[in-house]
Amino acid sequence: MFFIISKILAFLLCPAYWIYIGVILYFFTKKPKRKKGILIATLLLTFILTNNIIYKKTMLWWQTPRQEIKKGTQFEAGILLGGMYTFDDDNQGYFNDACDRFIQTNKLYQSGIIKKIIISGGSAAILTKEPSEADSLKKEFIQSGVKEQDIIIDPASRSTYENALFTKRLTDSLHLKPPFAIVTSAFHMPRSLKVFQKQHINVVPVTSHYIVVDKTMSPEQYILPNPKLLNDWGLVIKEWIGIMMYKVTGKA
Image (cartoon, rainbow, N blue to C red; front, side, top):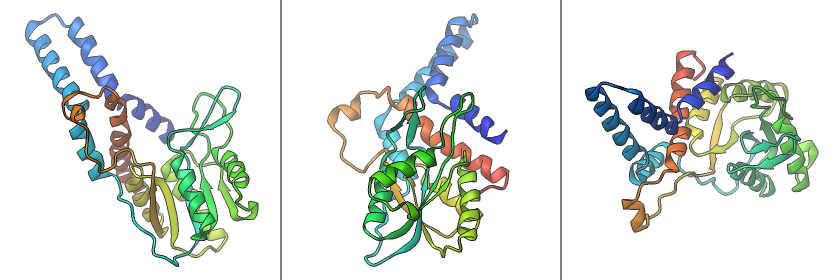
């Protein structure tokens, strides 16, 4: 139930829908004063949410910064959180824009920094049946040269909380010695760290998939609005709400 509620909230928290609702309310509202208020609020919200500077500053503040791993450091395992694989109607899998999680994990393994890879990720589908992401990623890692015996999978977890809960069971049952490297997107890392720490799993963050990097913007980015940000804001808003919900329910 918690998983389904979180998916519904993720849909409602996308700012693009807020603007859409504002436009609808404007056209259907009859009272002039209220109509004017809705118009001003919708325009102000649109300006804020399509402003490149505001979005960049917020994401740089929120994302977990890159942390260099000291030479010679080695972990018994690296924990890879799912979310980088998408399936079509024929259950054919494809890497999505979060595939850097896979790339960074593979680099850690190939360089000898992690001995084993724990893939945590089931199916995030609600209305349809999809293959387990962990099973599919296991095949991708094997094709990339990772030994099958070095891959441990959690094919059941469907949320960050379950990632931590099921990973804890795996590491304890296999008697793996912490700390572990944890790999996920930079914007998802703050919530992941809180949830894993709540489960008493000692992890070291290895960030990937940076939505924003500290790079000088081009002149037009300072002036022109960016409609794409209406969707992008949903990523970080989902993380903020997720942390609040996890704290309220004792999961973080």
